[in-house]
Image 1 (cartoon, rainbow, N blue to C red):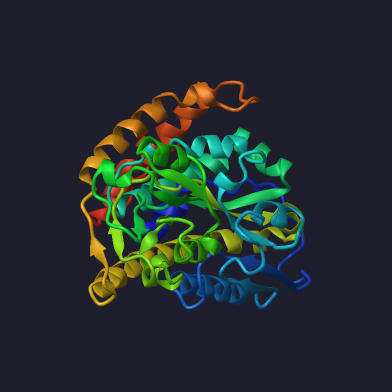
Image 2: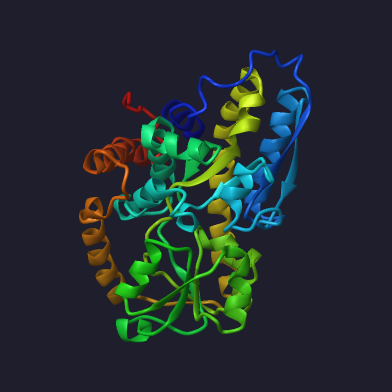
Length: 366
């Protein structure tokens, strides 16, 4: 049912109307490089492998892929420019690392606290609303085109937590704690709690925690990521601080390479993507389950940061309310753009709630 919702509610690619008139049968074979942040052997890597194989089969071998896991082709801070320049064909791009090149996307990502809390509700509502909005937004389409990329899909993590080397439960405990973040809005949230945020790419999280550069690490969709990146070997406290979800994390493709594909090939990629998202989400949930099952064996202690989360929730609410004031230049109607995104969140909330309950999706037309 989630695949149906993704296909029906997710809008259409911002690359609609592009692509060659060539038939799939007559196209020349191409190999696309796919840069992914997750570790090889992880559940999410398995989901990606299945997607890539499916696309290759459906195109009769005309499209093949070369996979690069753990950001081995493009570091997290190089993904956007690397895809734009054709060093990589497709990569996950986190807008927090590219606020100058993706100012509108990064600004909208700071509205993340408006998502409904609750796992896996946030991780379903976010991609449905985010992809639909991103794929239909003139401002974002123009921003992506200016960077020579197209967006294939946008997704969202759950509300954050942290793996730490010290026990943290109160605001007094949090004061002065050095925490790895991926940029905004997480840095501002950490500061509001008296913590010291340090922006570090995901590929450097383990070393930073091991060497004591940071006391805590936050990571989108923690769970299995904490174990596959070795963080639980060093951090023994899971602190469920409700940092904002990471939104508008997008899989982007080099625009020139996308435009060169025949339209039937583009359609196969986009239609197959819905199944990939379902498998990716399922593997994320399974990864959390494995993390919880293995926590005691790994010596992980769960803390209760209720006092911290109360203050954080107040900060997040105020931050979203003030977001229009910090809109980047070039947006003619920032209030209208923000409202359009928040309206998408409201539209897809009941869809996501129904999916969590096992009900078939009935999305409103948008």
